[in-house]
Image (cartoon, rainbow, N blue to C red; front, top):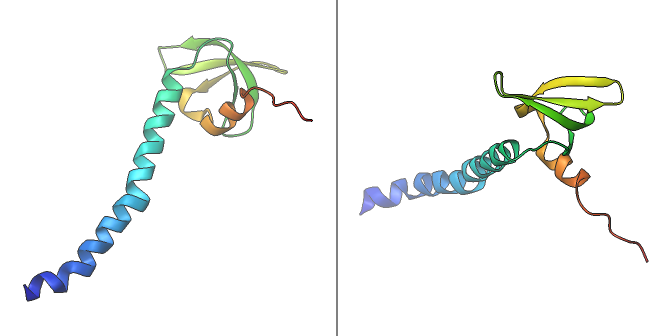
Length: 97
């Protein structure tokens, strides 16, 4: 029993690290993977570097998307698309009173 009480703070620390750091990161990675898989033509997106555009086509060969911007068409990897910014961009506009 004495040994268990000595290791209790260390075990508790690992539990806290898991629930506050590791688990949320795994959940966010899963959400981003699902977001990238559900992209379709015509979606308006923002890349992680800040480039805004609309998806024109997909290149399954090298896992990338072709984005139409004001400057022309550009190819980006699916992983470079920002989930948070793209979801905010596609939210319905709320009317102000």
